[in-house]
Length: 213
Image (cartoon, rainbow, N blue to C red):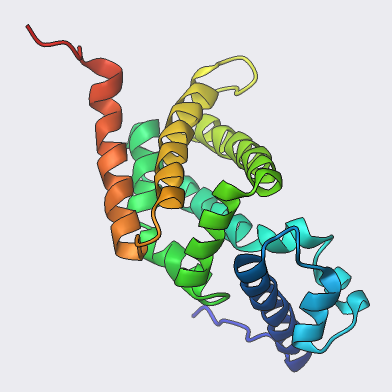
């Protein structure tokens, strides 16, 4: 029988401190702006030192994208665990939609979903954050492309298909992100529905003629 080892008191305390810093950072970023928020303000909100902050985060950018990094990690795991009889694009789609609740639960263990969505909107309207987001998403996409190549028995450096598939999928997700950023009233349920709509359009857009008559 498998047993789950519960983290020790020291590890739980460290996790609580990191989570508190992260929540404080995102609240400050979304209320007064990323560029107008200092590390001092974040640490003062949690009553810890700057040294403690930098023990958990390399800087403000790391804090700003910590939840996104968590979501990407969970997504990569979900892709790896998809059945091998699914096509690559099916595996990517199902990794998002069938594991949506699991990914959302992982996020909610750290910050409220509403705060995460507010941070997504802020990212879309802040040039420095948007540039960092696109760079990080590209790095995450490379990891997923290698997972796809591995499950398909391909060499990602000689066969372009894994990177092309991930690029197409990432492009659709990017379109949905931009829609999230333009709307102030999209909650988690509406965001999922929008993602489904755009992913469902991917096949017809790529394979069918658009003109009629």
